Structures are given as structure tokens and as C-alpha cells.
Image (tube, rainbow, N blue to C red; front, side, top):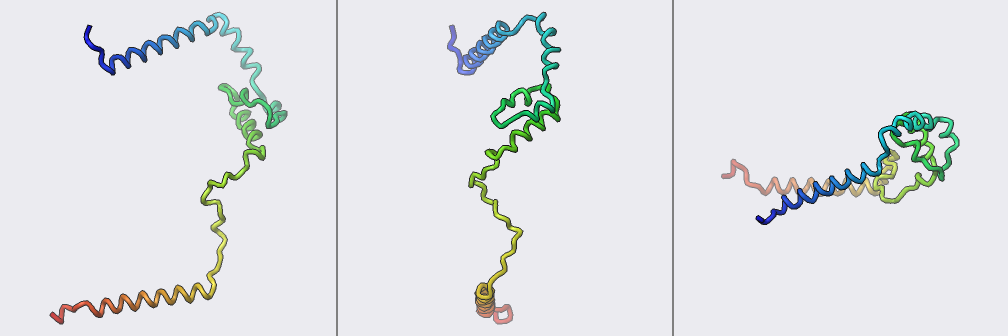
Length: 138
């Protein structure tokens, strides 16, 4: 028997695992005759907007977010869930939580310092331009 490569072994093991899960699912799944009888019962017990009003933060929200639930009911249930103050806590990791629309005017001292720095830089640039040889000097 030739040595099995890594990829061949990996593929074989993966295929065997998938086949095993399919066999387990078939063993657990109900028979085909039971499914149509249960389908109307499941749709009859779908959550309604009236049931959303009775929810509390400690309630089980699982039926309200399951597949097949009306979108309006799902949104109302989630809105009720996230209205709880426990979900409205700042974690402190938000870097940009300040209100940058508030304008804080510069003090006269800061304006004077900025003007002084601007004048110093302008003088340095003027001095550098004077030190550079001109084309006429050559």
C-alpha cells in the first residue's frame, strides 16, 4: 500500500466525519409522516405583537427571533430587549465619544503664542531664501 499523502488523509477523514453527522441526523430526525402534522401546530404558536408586550428583560426571547416569525414581531421583541438599561452602558473603549460640535474659543495667550511661532517660522524661511545663491550670482 502506497503512503497516503497529507491531503488525501485529510479529505478521507473529513468525508468520514460528514457521513457520520449525516447518519446521526437521520437517526435523530422524526419520520416523514410526522412532519406535516407538526407544521400547522408550529405556525399556530407563532409569537404575536400582544405577546411582545408581556416580555420582560428576564424573558426568553428565543421564540421571537426564530425563523418564520413575522418581521414586525421580531423587531418589536428586539426593541423591547434592548430598551433594558443594562444594554445602555458605556464601556469606556469608545475613543470618539466627546461632542466635537462644541466650540471652545482660543484664549488670547494661545493666539499670541501661535502668532509668535508663525512669525519665527516666516523669518527662518526668509533667511534661508537670502542665503541661497541666485542664478544671477553665478
